Length: 284
Image 1: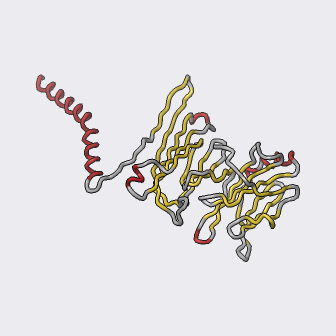
Image 2: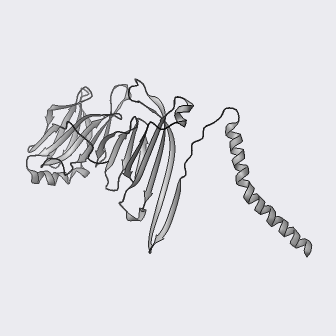
Image 3: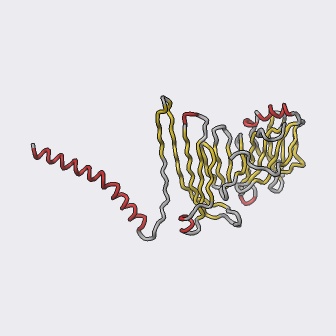
C-alpha cells in the first residue's frame, strides 16, 4: 500500500513540476526559435473575450487585434511604400445592441528594423463596432448607427461617411475611386439632403452638397438617404455617370477626367447641388 501511495505522490509532483515549467520551456523554445540566425523583433498583442453579470444583465467585452502588412502611398512619395498596420477592435457592452466600441489603428513604416521598433507614423482612435483594412490603402469603420466612415491609411485622415453602400469604379492604371452618399447633418443649412463624396483611398477629390429648395421637403428626402444607393452607368462611348435614384427623381453627374462635372449634371426639379468647400469632418 505504501508503494502505491508513493507512486501516486510521485506522479502528482511530476505533474505539478510540468505545469510550472512547461510555460518556461515553451518561452525558451520560442526565444531560441526566433533568435536562431538573425535577430527577430516580435510584436504581439492580446485578443480576448470577457463576460460578466451586471446586476442580472449580461455584458461583455471583445478585443481583437490583427497585424497586417500593406503597401500604401505615403505623403510625399511617388510610389507605394510598405507599412505595418496594427488594428485593434474593442467592442464593449455588446448586449446594448447599437452602442459603439473603440477602433484603434497604429501604422509603422517598414523601411528598416528601427522603423518598426520606433513610434508609429500615427495613431488613430475612433468610435465603432467593426473595421476592415482595404488593400488599396483605406480603413472602413462600421458604427452602431449604420453609418460607415472611411479613413486613409497614409495618414489616418478622415475621407468620407456613407449611410448606404458606396459605389466603386476603376480608372486608368487600375486605380479605384469611391462614390459615397451620407445623410446631411443637422449643422448644415436648411434644406440640406445629402453629401456626395468622390474620393480615392488617399484624398477626397470632390464633395457635393445636395439640397432642396423647400426645407420641409429636404427633411423628408434626408430620411431616404440610407436606402439610396449610388451606382455607375456607362454609355457606348465609355462615358461614366454617377446615378442617384432619389425619391425626387434621378440625379446624374458625369465623371470627366477623374472628377465630377457639376456643370452638366441632371438635377431633379426642386433640388440643387453645389461643391462643399471648405469641408471638415463633423464627427471624430
